[in-house]
Length: 126
Image (cartoon, rainbow, N blue to C red):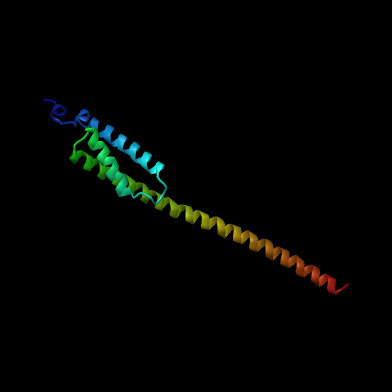
């Protein structure tokens, strides 16, 4: 007997409507956020709006809508975490560039100061 026939594989077609609903809710969220000035709507309010729209369409039930909203919240949190991490990396990179610029400016200043000092010494003896 082949053991592979005993393995239960998920039936993705059963969950296809959830994927479609998730994608539509993301589109609706993007639409709401792009049409609203920053600070005028909270993420919670926008999520509630897209949840109600999905429920009103009848494509998903309340339990499924809640599950999709949880996934969207997790995805938003993951993106925020990623942005904060990359922001820290950008800050470190920027600080390195600033340090290099400061070093170059300081070197140029010291070089010019040294040249000025040399010229001043030469002027003393004229």
